[in-house]
Image (cartoon, rainbow, N blue to C red; front, top):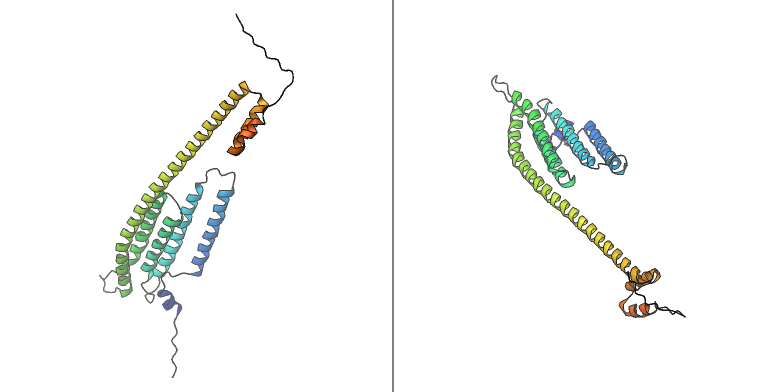
Length: 257
């Protein structure tokens, strides 16, 4: 005989890392499209002079993704007992994934990243603890195993999440210091290059004024062009600058007075 095992939606989604729903996927896609559109507008708009608003936009999009995904996980935490105690894993997966992506791919400063972690910790403990404590109350002898298992998993993931968050925050702080140093080095290098260009322009102007005081202006321009040609042809080019004039008089005068 052939046996067929039917697996319902509850059993299937209970074994997933994150229990996605259609409305959650729609909201996440809408936030993604909104983030791309506003980011493009911030960088293309001429009215918006301060482009750092794009970093605040990235932070806000990641924060809204965190809120939506954690609320989705908590919806399954409110389900009847036949649902599995997988939701603490989903909450842990959401925080770890978004915090890692935010650190390595957003480029936000340390202050915003630290603020994001404060909000994430507040949501993690504020949403999970009220769900675990009522179900784990054994004073009436009616506690079920699912909230107890969920509470055990929650405590275990809390022990993992605290050092993980501390490591990411330390890495974000060190990365922020390196980014600031690189930025200051680029600013100093640009200022030095501009100063060198100004000094070079000033020296060239002084040289041109000096030559124009002893030579005709037409020859000064030809001499500048002669300096830019190859060294072997410099002498021939300079010799060709000499001009022959017929009937030239030389006047020697001494001004007294």
